[in-house]
Length: 412
Image (cartoon, rainbow, N blue to C red; front, side, top):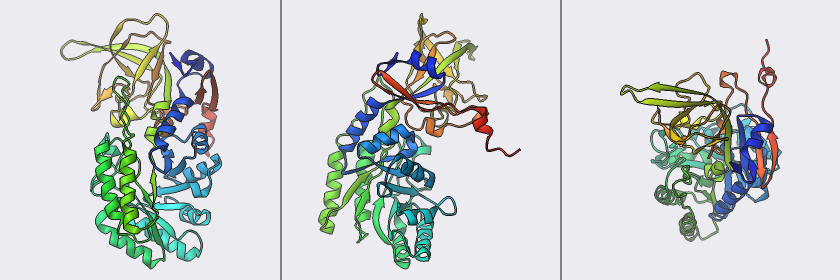
């Protein structure tokens, strides 16, 4: 099996396993697809903040949506200018965060009334910085491939509730702020019908802000992880957005900037996680049916999505003299029963794959979004190396973490 023109065996042999790999060609294809949809496109960098990925975005004119001050600083180090970055959050997580935004004139998108209040107080006290802010609105409903990724509705912590917008306007007026932007994000994994309906709601909310300059319709573009199914079509979103913005421009009689900020759709398909088969095991269910397990070295500390959301990821086996295809459950090394790559509704689900042997490779696709970004040191596992592939060339963009790296912050 190859990623672009590079054999996965070669990458594994040089960098060891597990290892994350990113196809630059696939990334550029998704950038080109998405940037056609709106005049201003931001990348929600929480999906994957690898420096090579960020620099690719920068080179293609994509701006940044960040959700922490450390992400803002990371984007600045990658070469983005302050005016290219929007900070979206529900809180200022650390002392000094709000002053950093003011001093560096980072456009701030406030997701709660409390955050807007804190920004206003700090703006008055500092007597400097950007008086223009954006607010994130909770429209009363959301969508997502999991309840955990649904970011709208009464059970979502995100956004200023749509019935509280008068209070947001009052806070802004009290602190001499200008609400120049409105934003919505309903969740990751919705569909075009949800996006169409919710963008219409945002237009209605936006009409209540007389100083409006920017309307950000968020992310949430659908992505199909199963390669046996057709990829979700998103080109029609362009006309939906154009219609929405025209309504606002006709209403206000001036130009309104239209933005979107996908994350997953940009990078999911460019990422792979290569692991290695370490053992085979089997059990029998209550009906006496044999269940075959392939145990590899990819755990949920490396790829959390299957355990956290029951997410589907395509899996391939790479090796010589593979056995016949059969139903197998692919699991990892972590000391948790939920450490299974092939699962649904918190239950192991067999996948039809060639029966491997110890030493064969497990290649997980769709790993570019929320793969490395959500990995951890659980079980004192090191963070993985990351490799960028372009054509027949490949380059290490992050080395594998060592035990010394993990322990260096400990004081005794």
